[in-house]
Every structure is written in C-alpha cells, then in structure tokens.
Amino acid sequence: MWPLDTSQKEVLGFAVSCRVLTLVLQALFNAIIPDHHAEAFSPPRLAPSGSVDQLVESLLGGLSRWDAEHFLFIAEHGYLYEHNFAFFPGFPLVLLVGTELLRPLWGLLSLRSCLLISVASLNSLFSVLAALALHDLGCLVLRCPRQAFYGALLFCLSPANVFLAAGYSEALFALLTFSALGQLERGRSWTSGLLFALATGVRSNGLVNVGFLVHSQCRGFFSSLMVRNPLRQLLKLMGSVFLSVLTLSLPFALFQYYAYTQFCLPGSAYPIPKPLLQLAVDKGYRIIGGNEPPWCSWELPLIYSYIQDIYWNVGFLRYYELKQVPNFLLAAPVAILVAWATWTYVTTHPWLCLTLGMQRSKNKETPEKPDPGFLSPRVFVYLVHAAVLLLFGSLCMHVQVLTRFLCSSTPIVYWFSAHLLQDQEPLLRSLETVPWKPLSGDSPPGQKVLRNSIMGLLYNWKTCSLVTRCILGYFLTYWLLGLLLHCNFLPWT
Image (cartoon, rainbow, N blue to C red; front, side):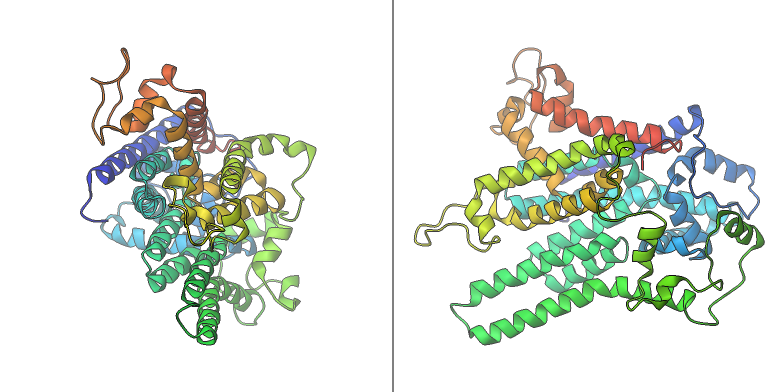
C-alpha cells in the first residue's frame, strides 16, 4: 500500500477534503439550527466547563448526539448502567488512548472536551485510512483498478458519512474490516484473523466476518484434495475453522463474561457519583451492585441479547409496524442497492452461486476467463456477506440503522455503485482510453472531466445518465442530510 501511487493519492486527497468539509458543516449546522429535544441518553456533566470547553462543545458538540453519547459516557465513566453494555469497548478504549495523546491539554480542557477532540481527529483518520484500505481491497478482489478507484471515492461520499465522523464506532469498524479482508486476500490469514477479532471488539456484527475465513479455508481445502491426503486436509480444515470461530468470538465472549462478573457476582459494586446515581433512579436504569438482573439466571447468560430485547425491542419482525414506514423508506435505497447487486450477480453467475463460489464453470476442460470488476468470481463471498447482513438487518433490527450498518460493514455498496457508474455512464467509459488524465480536450463541447472522476460527473451533472444521477444523488443527499439532522438531535440514527 505504501508508497502511494497516483490513484491512492487521489483517494487520500479526496478523503481528507471530505473529512474537513464534514467537520466544518456539522459545526455550522449545529450553530444555526436549534437542537431538538429528543428522548435520548443525556447524562449530567460532572466537571465544570471553562470557556475553552464551551468553545470545543460549540465546534464539535454535533458529534456527540444519539448513540455517540453512550460511547463518550463509557470512555469517561466506564460501564455503569446495564444498557451501556449494548456498546462494545473497542471504540471507547481507542478514545481513551486519544485523550492520553492530549495529556498536555488536560489542565486546559475537561475530559469530555478531550474526548470530543479525540472523536473528531481519530474518526477522521480512521475514515481516510478506511478509504485507502477499501481501494487496496478493491484492486485485489476486482482486478479492475478503475472500479476500485471509483468505489473508494464513493466511500468518501458514503450515505453513512455522519456516522463515520460522529462518536460512533463505524469508522474504526470499517477500517479494521477492510484491512482484514485485504490481508486475507493476500493469504495472511493470521493477520486477517487478528484484525477481524479486533473488529468484533468494536461491533457485534464483526462475528459474521468469520464467514470470510471459513470460505477461504474451504476453497483451500477443495483445491488441495486432488494432490494431498484428503483425510489430513479435512482434519486441517476442521482445526482451522475451529480456530477461526474461537478467535473471532473471543472478544464477544470476554465482554459478556465481564458483564456477568459485574452484575451477577457479589462484591462487584463500586462508588458511583451521586448525579449519575440520581439519573439511574430517575430513568430506571439498572446499575452495578443493584438487584440481580433476570439474565444472570439464564443457562447462557448473555447481557447483549437481554439488552437488545428489553431496552431496544430488537427481534424478529418487531419493527414491522405502520408507524415505522418512514424508517423503512429511509433504509430503502441501500436495501435496494444491495438487493439489486445480489440479483445482478446471481443471474450472471448461477453455477458459481450454486457451488458456493467453489467452481466457476460446469465445463472443467474449458474454464472461463475471470470477469474483472464487480462480476469477478472473487466477489461471491462478499456478496453473500452483504446479503446476510441485509436480510438480518431488514427482519430483526431497527431498520433505520441499515444504512450505517451496511455502509460500514461491506464493500458491496461501493463496488456495485462503481460497477453501475462504469457500465452506464458514457463519461466514465470515455475515461478508459486515457488513464488518470483530464479529458477536457477530448470531451464533448461544454463538458469537462476532472481527474477525480466522481467530481467530474458532478461537474457535468446535467449530461449524466439517469443511473448516475440516482446513485450520486442518493450518496450526496444522505451525506448532507445526515449532517443536517443528526447533529441537532433530529431523527437520523
């Protein structure tokens, strides 16, 4: 990945520009639009705020809305309330590392201000690195540099943009996941497994990534059957699958065990500041050292399942109510995009899908030449992963989170969009003849294609195809609307 080539430098520059613009716009929107009084987690501030703290809050306070407040609270106070355990410890720990780097400012800033600065700086860094990791992964999997380039540029304009900037774990999770996939594509399974495990410590859906490791191991098993001892290879496969499942589930298991020791074993209570204790009384929050929660007596005492059920009402088809129609409409574009990608791929490669990506052609004597780009056989496992996330998110989750859930977990959203742009947009097809150069002299009159192809399409918006306008319109609308609404406690979660 280092040193950076021309396309990577373009991605880096565009990603940095988008991050800076995001921080500026959230500060602007937070200043000019009054906050909505939402029923959200809002703990009291224990430390007095100075003039510098107030300045930091005015500039970066928009990054602390909705679930971000949980992550900031955990980083500042630890896991005091039962419902805090819905949020995994990876991101709060990273924020604490960020505050340590700001130690020279501790006398000037409160811990919360340091955490807000850590959120802004670290998530900007993670988002930029995630864009580069996605570009690198795209080059490895798609074997089509242009689609990899377009996909990385689209990630910089992600519909989940505000969640990649705010105090959420999406940016870190995307970086770890895309980096792990890149290592796996290079055959570095141990490094990949470690990065996947770290991702599981950041978000629970990291557990699903075990499918990538298992699929890679199964492909290796079938390819070695004809030349090596089948029984030995089968035992090796079983051992590898076991280690993969164990490695990725270990962070989740340790976190559940930590919760069990806090709530279900005696002697775990520790002093809680009075304002936070009063908040627990007023809101009915269960605290460590209080009455033993019912999940402690379960055969498999998982606090995460209990919290999702009781506090967030997450469950199969529970969100299918008439009043949730607006949220389904909000999630519809990304759901349609992934479903469309799945249909396109399956109808193009039915035999590959029937064999679970293990065999491309029925005729082994005349193997087909692999397709470059999104339709490459290497994309199969990524598509299955995206389809599983879409199915689970649509049926069992709060559907409005589907956009950030998919946009931070799978490259398919960006690869398929890049595939559509390259396939349907004449302006991009004209770029194929002159790699990485402006085509202003060769373009039709009145048109100018910039070096950054996505910006070139925006510059020539009126002459773009309908598909291009729909894709870029969706990405840009959600990119901007998320900042406008989320930063003021308006319904964009």
